Image (cartoon, rainbow, N blue to C red; front, side):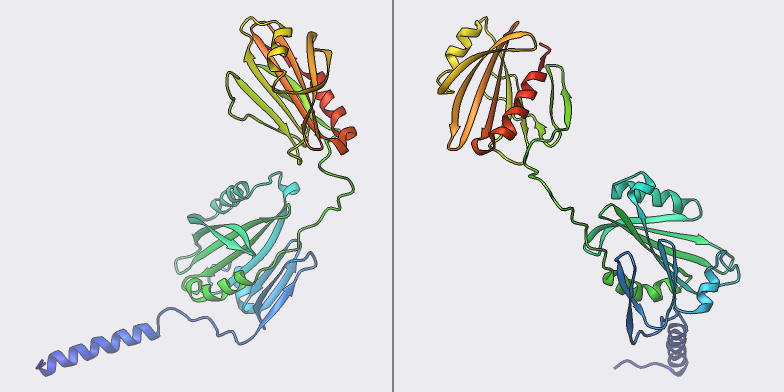
Length: 342
């Protein structure tokens, strides 16, 4: 059985009482939130905040404070005598106004802004309003008795950047974090704008882009993406142009000619393209031949063959037969723009 003499017992009781006193007089506690209300912005975003808190609307910005005194403490300018208080700001900035369009770039912009007046701390990724978010912590010593701690959470949504900024003096930061986290969790951003589509987006665009590399140059519809699949067989390069439909494609392959004539190349490829008709053409001033063939049910195709120097070029186009008038002229423009660099 453990026995303590009176002096040790008194000492232990005194230490326990001191610990209880320090705990009860330690970090300030945020007021209990008994009721929440919803702020609805004219531009479509919304969030919940404690009922009775002060809310101030400004251009592209909303400020929230638990009391008038807190609002006075944050100014601007910040009251150098203040030692407690909380400020929450929710605002937005448009891509076009900033000249940037990615969340990473906006994060860097905010870090640079914060660094001008504060010491930047940790950064991490999070979620706000179902969007990927970047979080930036910071602090600033404003007087001998006060440090402002803060964090900013930023998201990108429908060509607009949104941010929620939380700042608090001293121990109010930790005390109010649960309330701020509840506000963050309640944020709802405007519904994305839906652009009414008035024409079939699968059709080749009339706007053309130029593609060039060390082997070829051509123009293609700007809604057709160029890719470079892994070449097969003796092909040294494969280039593919494809839009929304995977049966309407331009595929260019480059092979070593192996000193074969154009006629011999066509003869060797006839088996791969069971033709319905053949014809002659000129591509980049070089004689060419083509085979029209049936690629699949409701899909027609045409294979062009060109021999220039030590290379043989094969360009295959396929199109959905019911949309021939949309695709074939566009693909013929691609063929007509082709320049052979080898």
